[in-house]
Image (cartoon, rainbow, N blue to C red):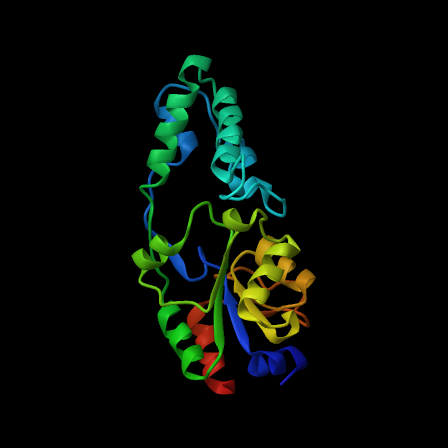
Length: 237
């Protein structure tokens, strides 16, 4: 067993990304650019990617609780997006409201083995945390997906920073009362989850969903699925 696998077995806290790791899409409404094109405008997925929240990964943002707040910041970005998509100025605000209402129709469900992995860690006395680049208060989405209670939760919109910014990882470690070197971070996004965890001093576990292996096998533990990760945990816990 190598050193990072040893850290996997001795870690006191396991912190999970949300979307793509613990949950997957149940119902997906049209993307914003698709809706705009259906309305006769001229949008594009690349244009949406520039202005949606994921386009600001690694950045500091307003939080949900400051003035102006995260929701207002998000609308500022969407204004530029819909304007560049050809929406005339008198319709901008109503189109934004419609797009946000459609976005909220998305539903999520627990990914295969998500609940059993969390239960396994609980049985062995490990703390479990959730750390997500997420636009909303997350509890209703956890309830919708049927996920259990976590010992600590960090949501980017609530703290005003987005992974891979180190503040996100520091915040969840503080909530769990754990040092980064004693924590494992499990995520599916190399750029935000894996790079961010490494920068912050956590051991990253990459759920790669059958992508090619990464270049840092001596620093990153990799599994194709949560089921594979669970199998390994059963061997070492």
